Image 1 (tube, helix red, strand yellow):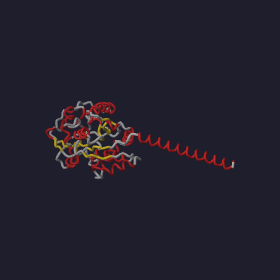
Image 2 (cartoon, one colour):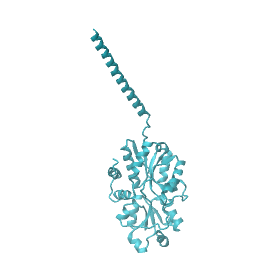
Image 3 (cartoon, helix red, strand yellow):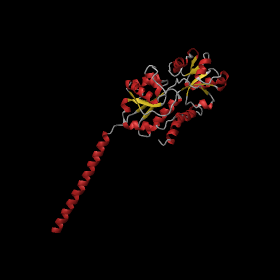
Image 4 (cartoon, helix red, strand yellow):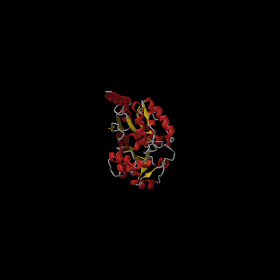
Length: 311
């Protein structure tokens, strides 16, 4: 009788111990679930892509890189340049875009000439301007892409032009071709007027970005506005005119976003991790694949992310 009672008591104690363990597990699991539900949700990202190859490539790089971290991302093609991008930010059509420090600063400040070759100073002033638009910048990249004025080697050799000062002294009658925003971009026609006292506005031909190089090759224009990372400069043996008076500024690639998503620490960490691999040499190589080899931007971006260990 005592033996039976003792065994029964042991059984009750064992059951109570099992129940306690089960209760602890449920409590722990519940606490974990509660903590998880309190974590900030990943924001949905809509990336604005401007109307040129490098912007399309960068948009794909950030899209695929962020998707690999679990973010939902889409790309909105803007069909234009910075003015349409800023309107898209204002209207809520996009909330993220790969930008360029100096050019974005001069667009937002009304072309005050604050941008310089000092990256830190330019980015600091850009931050002030972005703040007024409800935008924030992530960490700036080392990848620099400035405007570049180029000529065919035959034409440059014929006229003896190697620098923008040479162009100013000999090229007032030459035809300049480039994207339409060259007329207002402080690092194109306005910059040439201000820094080199060269006015090419009367001889300017507005062109789609994709048509500039072929128009130069055809001889329809004498000078072309490309980007310094354009792979066609080397591929076509163009002469890149030296900016000997330092008209051009620090146009480093820098992602910007609406403040409400830029404050998300998980997004910030993911964006900065991608940006760390974007260099000038990488931009040149990727642009060559897009402009010369005619590879797709999404494929170029995937290869870049894979080689960088981000996919």
